Image (tube, rainbow, N blue to C red; front, top):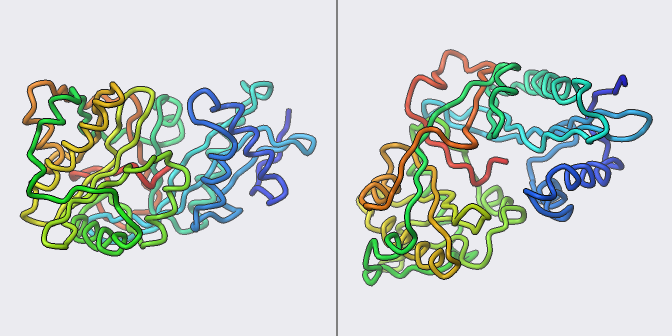
Amino acid sequence: MEPKIRAVRRAELTQVYELLNLVFATKEGSPVRFAAQTEHDSTFRLRHGRVAVVDGRVVGYVRIFARTMLIAGTPVLVGGIGSVATHPDARSHGIATALLEDAIAEMHRSGMAASFLFTGIPGFYERVGYQIVREPSFTADAREVAGLADAGSWDVRPMSDADVPGVVALYRRAIAGSTGAIVRTARTWRDPQAWLDEDDGGCLVAVRDGVVSGYIRSRCRSYGHAVLEAECSPGQEGAIAALLAAVGQRAVAHGERIIALAPDAHPLAAALRSLASTVETMDVEHPMMVQALDVRGKPLRSEPVRWWNTDRI
């Protein structure tokens, strides 16, 4: 089997969605989700979809997610790796490795400074140059989280479209000077909502005196109620506790535990560490991995990172 490795053609995208559904159906959802992840991502370009083709049939796929990331506070172009899939009848022929090497070459050509991914099989990606970045992971009893704070001093409600500019501005202030944060616009903020399975109330805001002081994003998953990210204005750390309590109430209603990744010195981490039921570990099931392509002398793994995985992959 000698596949041709190249950029995907628009006429082949239906084959790609069918392949992704075949490979990930039990874990990720339906072809509609994979189509949305491509068609509703304003950053997607055909050259970012790398395919392995045999006799006109797509048998392998890797997606590059073009993002702008802060490294030591400086925005640089980076590439996330996701949707890595090989058709079951084409496995054990090195197709995934060939696609990853091709994707890395494409990221070099595109001037991307680094690449990142989340995975449950880090050993595979280490062979092509990726390294694990450890970050704290928290698990807590939802009932205890629900009683974390009295939200009476905050108006905690679902985020509306009118809130997006304020939330994006809050996010930008929170990530200034950091490493690992993705730079967002109002449009790229909205894009992931088409594929992240966030139900009504998936993003909550905490409002005081008519001003959005904090937000939290979460979603129901098979393994628990996952907190995807949370930020607040300086001096408004109580907003995080109030928002987390609201998420805990939702998780109790669904019989779920609370699960979160959080930067080490973040108010979300502090709130979770205050609970007796919280279990913290650095040995996460699906760690973040990075590979420096050209960071122009800027540190990538030598300082604390601020990863949120909401708009990644």
